[in-house]
Length: 245
Image (cartoon, rainbow, N blue to C red; front, side, top):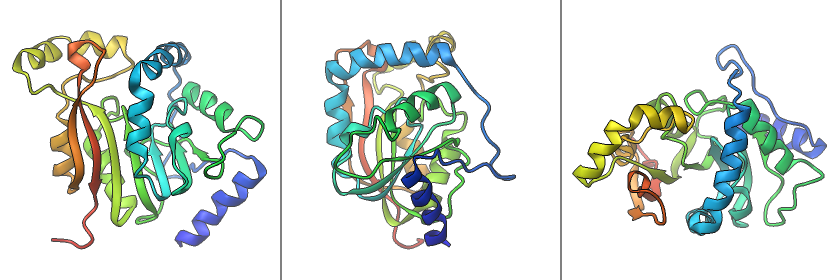
């Protein structure tokens, strides 16, 4: 089952085709935010130069085997995957973001030499159209703050990972400083409208553990320079247990 499914991706990728997975159980997302996608590209270019690129690179050193990236956006992680990533499937639900992602990984523009050209799939993190236990690694960077249902996204990540598979995470979360947390809750609504649905007050570290993942090498980062409500991030790796408890 897994081999047959994966062969479909390999054949399409070799032709330079976009891979789609629209099925009755996983309908194609209809969201498209071109203005936000443009603004995101501009702001993220500054943030990457200010230090986020180094953080991404450090996180992705642990990526291995068949890798699934959730909410790949404009493809900021793609330049940082190591040679241990045998293949990368990049998912993104937003049509405007997807156009930028396709442009980056297209046959004429993809210049990555450490691993084959990524496969692009339009899909939501909460409803992944892949067989169970089909990936060695799942990557989520600055995604769980904006998905509609982070618990469902983590459950799906657990499902598609092989036993012993790795979840790599870089996500901002509810601050452990009560004063900052107070402002995160106060500003939640306006910030969501401003930042494309981003939630400031999600306890992402707790949600990952509640989903059944085991910490491997995880820590809390105080990311600067940025505003206080966005400084606390969870960073590192978690494992899917090899057997049910």
